[in-house]
Length: 131
Length: 453
Image (tube, rainbow over all chains, first blue to last red; front, side, top):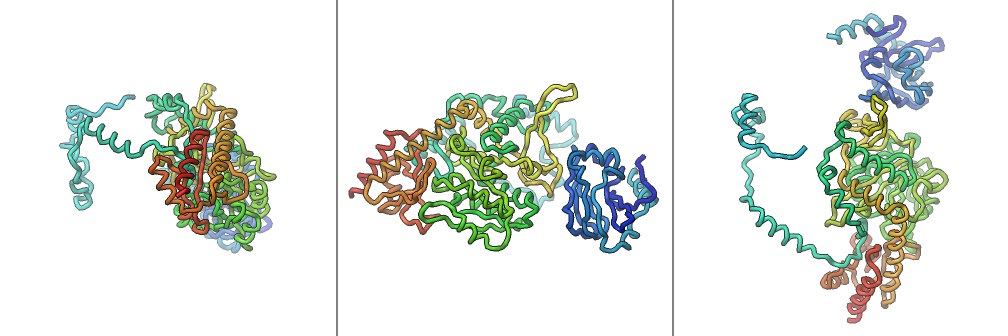
């Protein structure tokens, strides 16, 4: 049963988003996603300063058996990336919502966050997928 | 596992087991309109008749004295190479996706990759591609993908690079939005100058610079200067090199201050006979930073569950069967047989042997040029040092000379005018370690006779 923290927002492509105090958002992939992918070996992070549209591929996570695109949940400009993943991509497996964060965005329009799934809706999506 | 065709009884038993009426019935789901009509294939010949036919065809090639290079070279291949390569274990081994059944194949690939990294002075090698020209196309694609800083889809490509390579790269990258910017060569030296690069590049950025060494004319380029120039302009340096030349010349990993980023070229000179143009193989190596951008198979060394060493294909997430349309290339194969030959060839020669082949080839070419230019009207086209080929100006059209030489069972070289009209009556000649004093004297005699009337 994967972990779905209540305070986060989610996308149907298994990304999570956290609102930070300074108005930026942090993005990562969910516990369910890391379980499906298996041991992460490499992450191709976006460039700091790059602007991403909502739904655009901005990042690639690679495991021993698959390489998966990560889509930008909302439009914005990349303000930071998790450099430590270069040496320890396995942080995504062990702590998907904490140490395994991928990048931070300065959102173009913060209101877009409200359109994302909340924890309950994401949980429901996971349960539907399990069939 | 031996190959034994099915008998009719085998086929009948299998059809019965799966409940099908005939083999044809298995293709029922293909609409009749799409099925292939009966093919007009002539009656089969028996073994004796096929033998006669193939002997007749083979005799058409002859065994002329070869002074042609231009991308494929007549080097001696020790008999042991193909004696070993044609052993069943190598000859019919299939692709090594199932590691537990492919340790031999994977080890050969690993040894090959190791040798190519040493030869080119770069950190990573793949298990080979189809040929030098398509390897360069892949290198160009790598440079655009891997050089995110440049944000450019332009590649600078010298005219001193093999014309067939330029055509091949264009054919492969054209529809992928990559612009190839041609750089003219210096008419006196036959090489690519920084001035020419500046003029060709203009103000816009570019992702990579292709640097051939030696170039199509056999001329040695100023690789350190060109590599540093590329790096100073945020571009990657892509070396296109002759592997035998690397027995003598500085490897791409040592070029300029930081070394070239990618090296590629034609592997034919390492153990593959000329065989009328193929099959050959392309090699591709790169710096560690570009590891995830290199296409093609990569054999890796690791340990199994019991801690015993073994080999396996690795970094497969770059490849098609995992990454599909986002793979580093549509190519997911390698030239296993030619690579096996090259690995054995390199192991037999060793670095010392390869250097001796290179030195002998360079010396024979010097002797050839001296001998031919002793004739009136025959002069070197360019004034720079060459490796084992040279471009010569002739007092008559090259194809006329070549025709007369061919009648005397000599392939005198390759005419340059078709690809470089401005060079006029020009011929590219090559002497490998196989073309010693006697052969050179024979060529010179023919040339003298031809020019005398």
